[in-house]
Image (cartoon, rainbow over all chains, first blue to last red; front, side, top):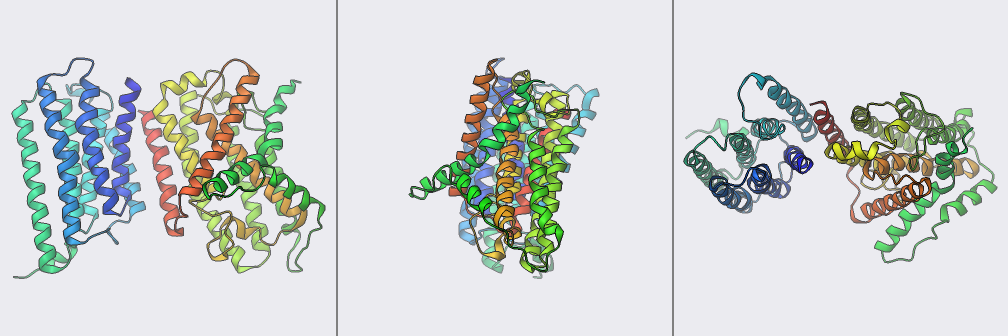
Length: 217
Length: 303
């Protein structure tokens, strides 16, 4: 059981590395959905199985899976179909360097975790917090290193996934309504951003954020 | 002296060319062909050994030395790796480093011999080979560090000792990650498909094959046999990392390890038949990914 959770955590780490290293949207979006399903289903179930699954967890799982695993990838696929984007050709930071940054972020995440010893963090699993920090950091790297607006939405969702993992650590203590509120916010944000991207691509024939800075009305 | 010590080397020397036969048959199966006999490489080796060698006038003694040094290096490497739970002929703390650098010496002489011909194509192949193997070395060493940390030993024979299956179960995540990284290193070092196509004869895209174009006769036999042995030694490290199995009986362990090598041949064959060669620019990315896998394993075991 312990090894199974370990492997699951590592698979989540690897999906993050894959997101950093692949240029094709056709790879990134399913990976994101897969990460969402892992986070939404496997993680809470495996973590809380020993102590019994409460309604709280059940509601969380039932709402997270359709949202992170199905709806977000669906919305993103719709955007790339409408804007006709296959892949990002030249990001600010090249893909091998992104993977290297990802490794540095991994070390940083584990270091941050080791500095948290003084705080009273509920420890469901030793890898839970590093994975959460790491996913947040990867989301940040994705947002700053990519030029296409769609990739920034992707990075935003990854970052939010990380916060969700952080939320699992406190799942017993935080009220369900709060988490549902966060999920609602994320959903609305992704929805609005995807519409905005579609509008930008209609207006300017590209969604390169680097060129958006010299917009004039 | 215990006669068992010679078994790992004996297996390598006798069965190494067979693995290439298995890879070729697997590829033929996927291509819908019957394929060459399993023992084709043995026939090729005997044929080449009976021929004479031709040397270009522009080459020096380095060119003649290259294949011999390569074969000796890889033969030495076979004495460092245990097989089927039997300790290797040579083992001492730190032999993992000797192993990596003996293979490095082999590559160095292959590259020197290639450069010695003065052919621009061979120089190109040499540059690529050195570039990719420098990147592969990172993944390989990080993986070795994980193994050394998990087993608290710095010798292959102590790593893959009788207690390895228990250590494996306790660290299965790291071991699987390292195993995948080793597999990518194996494909790179042996010039197999996602990195280099052993069958291609288009010089512009060749890596390993282009360096040995000018060798002929017994020299070429040494090179072919050397690369088969290299596949075998790296393969034994991969299979022992990924399939830990100890029954207690030497014969059963040997049989299992041998079967694992055959499975490795089939896996490589399947990878070669289902994947296309990567563009040269993408290869470093694959190797960086392999290094990343090793690093994740390292971070997990350092935690």
